[in-house]
Length: 637
Ligand code: COA
Ligand code: AMP
Image: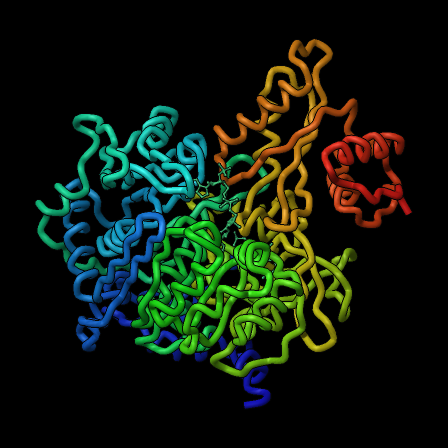
């Protein structure tokens, strides 16, 4: 109905208590809340205070009682192992309950942390739900991160237990996880009591006697555990995400708000009904995987697809369409980079013709800016609505989206459309005032944020306030810049901080600089994100060597590439660095990274008024040209 979207958005902001109390009726509670929203300790806010519930009960048990026990809950489709396995709600619940029993036998209980470092196998989902069943708190670490990153997370959330697998499978190579896990535990100050290792047949992990236990053995030996009631305000999970330094931020997800928001999002944003098949082609290590592979589809009684593969090469660029057809997927979610990878190999979508996509209704895209070409390719070839939507780890669910279940708004390529009900999104200009229409500024969200958004960072209220709430009092700072046009559509343009987005993965250039600076021959360094046709952005390092450096330039660049891979992980995709004589700086010594990035990407830029020595920019352009960038460099305007 025309106007319904705006009406619902207005209602959600004018009367958030009633709006979210209504939404919360769709969730199972052992005890209902006393207060919908408590923001007496603003800027902190707590939703559904006094309510008691359990995440895993809402994901599984309640649906079995409602008659969905024989419905498929999870389809594991793994082209890299040539496997398809289906789990009904009853089967999945039984495995989760038994693995929860195993964790309980290892001493895991309410409030304890469990780190999950796993590839895309059903056991990753089972471990998440089993942790939630016990009222414990999981923290999933993406498999593409190196031991150092894992160690940082171990020390921050001090898990009682770590659940992992013997290996992951990347196209063309096995990734043995266990040596990475062992190195991380060696490196960390905190030691978990136990590690539970799922042995995959392609690589057997060596076990540490006394500490490591075989998944199969502990699951078989355990008695099923019941769901443990928790407070709505208790954390369901911690998910670390890149900040501006090497120390990632532990985003906390509150149990009750998470349930309510995700359950609401399925019919309203994605337009999906219980019983339908939903597929998010992401990884459980990212927020998209948490919210839309595991939790939201299961909270809503859908069938979710867990895909262990890549958009191309497993075996070809038609694999996504094969999965949609084979499993009768109604709605799919992926990152624009995945579509760009497919488009590169199959520009005319010829592989689509081999598959019956008649059940497919909508393609959602997020994780990075969706370029209009990618959107147009989806619309032309998939012949269903292609929906760019914008959100982040911190929000846990979409902030700005065309809400297919409410009212389909006209699309403006390059914009994820309008703020979703619950989110009061504004833009603040350089003068600290609310920006006019079309005026670029910092994208902020007026507090309180709706249910499901992060209430704080794990055991670090201070960093939560400093990172997000200080610059614009009364607002949450998203870290993105953009504008709202005259029709109320948001346009997200860039980050305002040192975060870059590589193939839909959020990475910190600051963290990479910390690694580069640790090289003995490096005096100074800078990392920027440069435009990449496939991955959106890729990192590029600039190094100034010490006068005393005894290695050749290319030896140092090779070293730092290896160091980033070793310390942050292959996912950083840090493959290029160059040695320069100096870095461009302001007179106060601040490195002009944004100007360097504009030169690399052939974007127009103004000579910064405070630059120390403008000549350096030509030297930087020369170094970039040698790497194949800045080919159209014309100097400052
Ligand atoms: N475990 C171990 N290593 C991993 C990994 C994992 N779970 N995931 C990625 N890596 C490695 C890759 O093997 C690769 O290593 P390499 O340098 O040896 O080749 C590196 O990390 C970069 O991986 P990736 O970003 O996947 O790049 P790619 O070149 O292999 O593939 C795409 C490019 C576009 C196909 C791929 O990035 C993609 O599918 N992106 C979609 C991302 C996504 O879904 N994001 C979630 C947000 S919705
Ligand atoms: P993450 O926390 O990893 O999900 O990354 C969130 C960040 O990715 C956002 O703050 C944006 O910078 C970027 N992002 C995600 N989705 C979009 C989108 N649809 N359009 C533009 N940027 C996006």
